[in-house]
Length: 290
Image 1: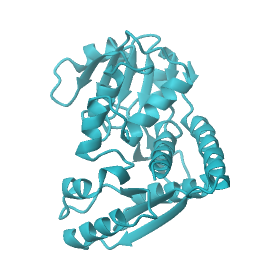
Image 2 (image 1 turned 135 degrees about the horizontal axis):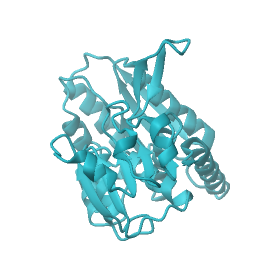
Image 3 (image 1 turned 120 degrees about the vertical axis):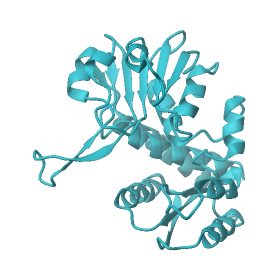
Image 4 (image 1 turned 180 degrees about the vertical axis):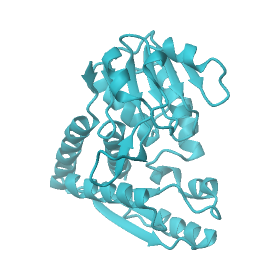
């Protein structure tokens, strides 16, 4: 069993991005600028946004963090998005999810102009991805593709099973793994909460990508020998084995599944860091286009 080390790989990718930024600036080009909007004070969202701001600093980007209160109106948030859309100094914009219930995530996503949508969630960008046209790929699926590529995982002709059909990970992941590309050409099965024979399908996977949000859902009996496992889930659960009283767990029961795998992502330190690296890569692409 070998770890698919997202932390190590993302640091390599960030070093490459930093070198590219230095080269662009030396030639008189523009410093990439990523803006993030954070609504409310959700602890996990705070952590994610702060990690993105630090990553910008590391690679030589400018960053702007806009904080808005939990009770901000939908129109106020949309106006902030429009203001950033019109600001030529800003290359990429992310609105940290989840948003309060009174705000439509779809409306917010559609208001971000596609050329600044570095999360890759806008319908135009998702449509271009489906057609295999140049676009911003959704950050988490793009990070997974990059990770598989860097570890030279053979995907062509393999059976890839994706558990979870969200528009953020599962659905775009299934499209990327099926496309005609270096990391792709899989036969893909997309499973979800209504799949009746999930365990049987899971056992047939050469590559299993789990993005369900249920801690330790995938157990050893659901995995075949030698499979490649990508665990997208991350949930904070109570633990009497840590000082904090909490532990981060993935969707895969790592200790029992890992011995059966050829490759597996750890949680934390697997997919999460790759998501941030993908955001930076998309922002660099956006800045280059100006």
